[in-house]
Amino acid sequence: MNYVLIDSLIKKALLEDRAYDDITTNSITSEESQAEVEVIVKEDGKICGLKVFSRVFQILGDVEIKFLKKEGEIVNKGELIAQLRGSTRVLLSGERVALNLLQRMSGIATEAYKASEILKEHGIKVMDTRKTTPGLRYLEKYSVLTGGGFNHRFDLSDMAMIKDNHILAAGSIKKAVESIRKKHPFIKKIEVEAENLEHVKEGLEAGADIIMLDNMEDELLKECVDYINGRAIIEVSGNIDIERFQRLKGLKIDYISMGKLTHSVKALDISMKNLKILKS
Image (cartoon, rainbow, N blue to C red; front, side, top):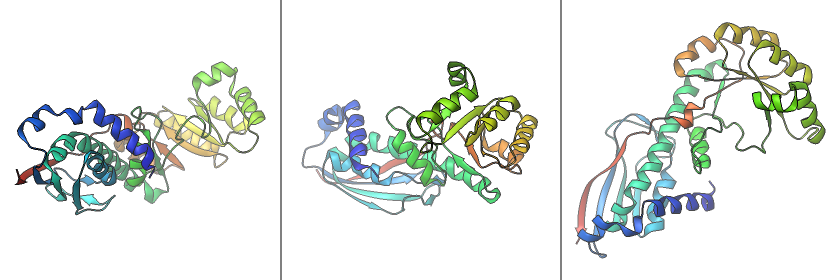
């Protein structure tokens, strides 16, 4: 993990929450106060972000953390996953930021796990997209990997991806592919987003490495998969959810990308409970 980047993200979150000026906690506890508290998961899922969770408290002060679950493990409702002991002020002031990150990362990992488990027996890989929370992309894409999914491009420099507006800007798929190949002859892959069979044909003729079948109904999607017939990597995207997997898993698809893994995922319900004062 990139701890320099993680520390930067956490420090911004702590400043946003004014964790160093916690009116409630600083009014009712002394600087010397020590406590212990438990972290309990309140629904089934896959845990992700334990090091990020612990780093929040390390940045704030002196806290000892004992994890009872490992990163990427399946957890069940009611399970105790960690025990914390240290400064009461640090525990209480860092609670929200630490839980926000742990809950979101675990929610993403859980959804990636559900999707990948359904499709892996059919040789289809589940990927994320760039539809991530601004500033949290690194953590969210890490969470997809932890859940068993795969990462699409991390940023705009990873590979060329020709979408509808790029086609309009270039004049055609062929012109777009030719322009990219001229500047990046072999070191970057080119993906073409296709909304119909004509786009698929033009993309293949232009020599695209990957064809994304975007927002297609099942019948058209099957026709396009059959037409490509192994001549390019096939990615399917657009309004894909777990319910639709049953209709797609028999097709010769390489990847399914799901924006929902990151842009509208439900956080896993996790709480810090049962705080006990050890020294007031």
